[in-house]
Length: 177
Image 1 (cartoon, rainbow, N blue to C red):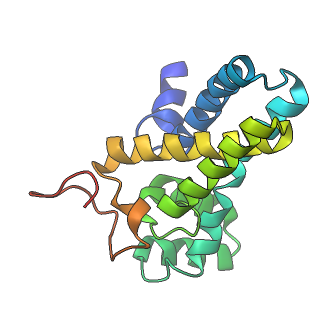
Image 2 (image 1 turned 90 degrees about the horizontal axis):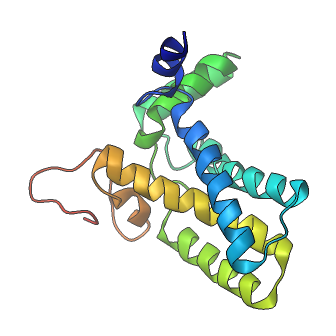
C-alpha cells in the first residue's frame, strides 16, 4: 500500500513529489538555521519558515496569465481554472511545472535580492525577516538543484537576460546556456 502511494504521488513527475520534498528540505534547513544563526526554535518561526518556502510559488500562478501565455501547458491550466476544475489544474500544473518558465520571481535577480535580504537580516538579527528570506532562499536553492536534476540546466533562471526556455539540455549546451 505504501509503495502504491509513493508511485502515485511521490515518484518522479508525480503531483506531490516536489512539494513534499520542499517540506522535508525546509524542515532540515530550518533546523540548521536555528543552530547556525540563532533563529528561535519554536512553532511560530517554524511555521513562517515553511510557509515562506511555499508562498513564493504564487508567482507561478501570476506567470500563467502573463509571461507563460505562449506555453501550451500553461494554456491548458488556465482553461481548467476557467472551467472551475481546480483539482485538475493543480495536479496538471504540479506535474508540468518545470515547463512553465519566465516566472516573475524565480530568476537570478530574485535569487540575488533574496540573498541580499537574507545576509542583511543575519547581520541585523531581524529574526522575522531572516525566517521569511531563509524560507524563500531554501525554496530557490531546492528549485535550482531540482532543475539541474530534471532539466539538466538552469537556463530558466536567466530568462531576464536572454530568450531561454526550459526544454532541457541538448548537444553543446552547458548548465547556464
